[in-house]
Image (tube, rainbow, N blue to C red; front, side, top):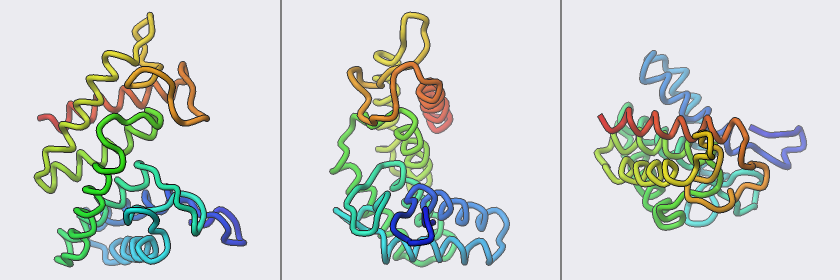
Length: 194
């Protein structure tokens, strides 16, 4: 998960995605190698990547930067690992992290639609699996805001979900990824609403 051979910067995003992928593959394949990889990545994250409020870092060792789209896959991965292995420590950590997310981020997600939609997708999956309807309600709230604020005059969802500027300096209105992310929010919300 390191960006370079000096190990000066890692990718929290890749760590989170690979952890979740390993847990999901194990659930599907029952191949112990998949579970072993997921355990390895989660153990590394829990030992070396925890910053404020017990959340996971995104960029550099010792950096306190954390972002929602790194947290959600690691939350859901640990929940799945708990369900598949019976190791309650994973469930307890997933629950603590999900609570921390509600306290840190509140209800209006404004980093950027492409990141916020990843968070919503995996937190809705976690919420459905764990019986926590809060995450679906949160996604529905953000989807309603996007339906109201994100569309341009042509009806394309190219702006911030809550109106105003998008917080991420590399994401700008009118980008295709903004449209795609908002569309995915609507799709995932519809899927989990059933």
